[in-house]
Image 1 (cartoon, rainbow, N blue to C red):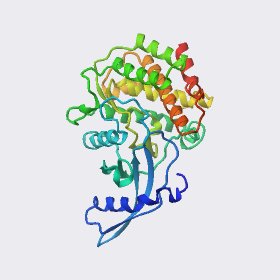
Image 2: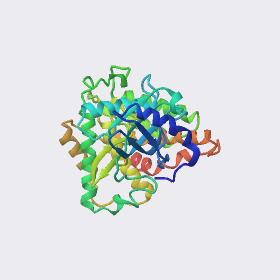
Image 3: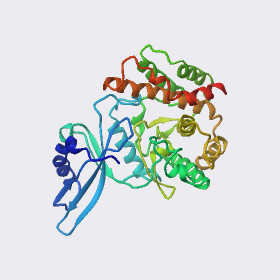
Image 4: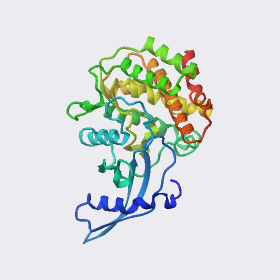
Length: 356
């Protein structure tokens, strides 16, 4: 967690306290402490806020997480009429909390009125634990790198378990049909969404590796008729871990109705990319791709024909996201407009995947 942000968020304390007081039963007063902004993340703003809740009978200190919509366009491609990442996360997490056997932080409320805190936001309870972070790279430092091989194996399989739990949600019962405006939610629909998004973000600039990946995926993507709720960013780093067990799933702004292989391929790709970017071999204990696919098939009862094109598709999607983020940094004045940084981060995993 970073140091408190000083006065940057001070004008939010009073309206947030009033907003919270309306959502707790029997509360006479809520006091809001200093806002902390964790490092990492490129979509909604995340703030960790200590609060003190006073009732006629007691005073309780607790911590909440506030996720607030950013003024910039969404990081991920818009798949439906809902382009508010905060709303997407809130509605998906609410559905999971009610209809899925996966750990979700207790949700405290969602606010659409931008007048309250400057943009739409939602609030949930803070869940403590360990997170495999990207900076510093979790494969090089931290609890994951320090863990014994058996613990890393458990984390890999348990991540797949909760991913399968997300996929098991009944879309109709959970009222998640709004996530798609199409009757066809196969991989080729997702391919079109992501390739169109990538081309818009490139705006005529070259990206040979990414486009070669999209071309191959178009030729090799297996047909599947299975549509599930996909997490969108399924990976170890979007799980809060307690004693190597999933305590809370996070980051559902890229959720979509799509084949389950979208998530499985992404999770496998991200682990490969994390090691490749760090310049190291896969750490001991991490199951092979084949074993992780076998475990997913076992727990989900969904047969996976060929995960290879889905892993490549995941790498192409990640490359497109990097282009989007670098564009955002240009807009913020953090990079020159003629930057080519967008070509570099994903290359260590795209090149070997294209060579197979």
